[in-house]
Image (cartoon, rainbow, N blue to C red; front, side, top):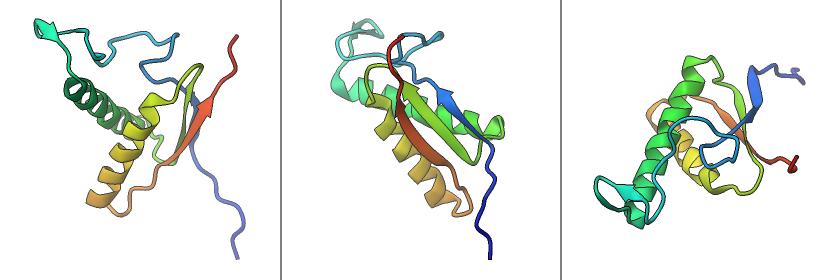
Length: 107
């Protein structure tokens, strides 16, 4: 019988909407997007592309086991990452990434 499982993980990864994020962010509704204000559909598509890239990055970094997506004020990107993981798992049933959403206390 096995009672313990060891997993390589990182529980302090921040989404691009976090205040301490550095780097490009997916476009938000109303922000400039190819010369026009971004629609909700544009924002959703850009967020999902980020989430897919995030999951790919976890694999590249060897974090195929568990990650914590931690923000200080909201959990908007969690659903996008959950969908990205589900799509990846549908295409590869052996893919097993655990997502732990987290809300860090403000500093």
